[in-house]
Image 1 (cartoon, rainbow, N blue to C red):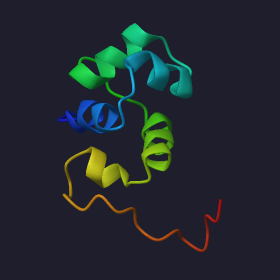
Image 2 (spheres, rainbow, N blue to C red; image 1 turned 30 degrees about the horizontal axis):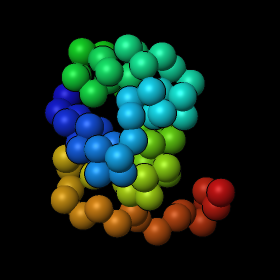
Image 3 (cartoon, helix red, strand yellow; image 1 turned 135 degrees about the horizontal axis):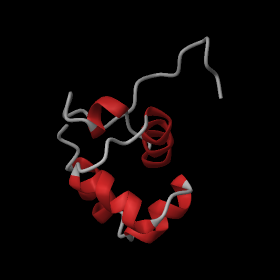
Image 4 (spheres, helix red, strand yellow; image 1 turned 180 degrees about the horizontal axis):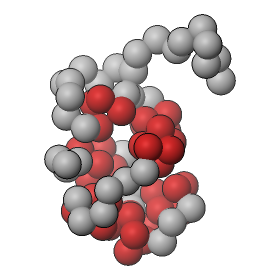
Amino acid sequence: MNINRLKEIREDKDLSQSEIAKLLKVTQPQYSRYELGVNIIPLEKLEILANYYDTSIDYILYRTDERKPYPKSIMNKK
């Protein structure tokens, strides 16, 4: 899975791997393995990152180049 955008987005915000690992409640080495594509990042972690970065999971996964998140579903107003 190509998730190089994890690193790009993190670096755009001048954040360290440790800061994002803390957000996701994982260790820094675990988060590093997500960025490298060694380990598959769980869907719930992708959702946290998409919300944190105000983008979509599709953007993180290179399914779109549109950075703006989709409108919220009426079924999931958080």
